[in-house]
Length: 262
Image 1 (cartoon, rainbow, N blue to C red):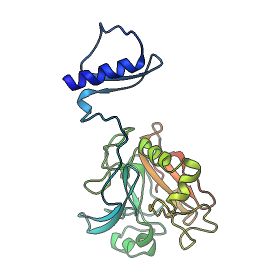
Image 2 (image 1 turned 90 degrees about the vertical axis):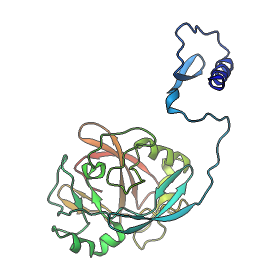
Image 3 (image 1 turned 30 degrees about the vertical axis):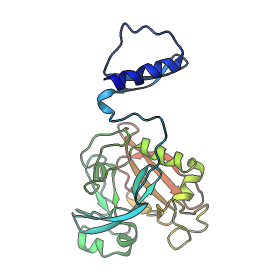
């Protein structure tokens, strides 16, 4: 505990205050500014404390295989995070757009209106855009999480997790803010995005595609926008997601009903 005690003493010294330590705890670190606690963390949740900003090392991109269906995906490192650079294609079942629920998991392929998984997988939209999931399907039984990282595997392959709203915020901040982050995530050109695909540079390598959504009983707006869930509930009926559209470079935070599908 000598190292930890030194760190705590150092932090207190930098505050420049005379503090009452009668109620001191040895299991929590408190960070203060101007006499106010601005952050706290349990010691058991920390494996190291450093006084410099770490620089990520290792590969910038690569591939992995989802062992559930042998699909290969590309991943990309953006700042201090690693993201899949393709939409998920895992499809355990499929229904048409007229079937929906806020509480039951449902899976869709844009433009497909039946229940044959093999037929759905044979469509061009499945090959290009993957699968649309309602929030319940995406979470796969997990509870809402605001943590960073979320620790919610959800529908993801082993070793991967769904991002929380906090993780989306971290990505957005790294890319320079919501006004420009969408453009840095979007695939360039108009092969998939409708014209003008404003601000698209894909400098992040994320290659976001406009897969549209299933909403209010029908598929809509393929080519116009792409939507991505978070693990974080907005309230009992809505969850946070991110929205990129063809006429803007914005990465917009928004909330949608849990039965919405993208």
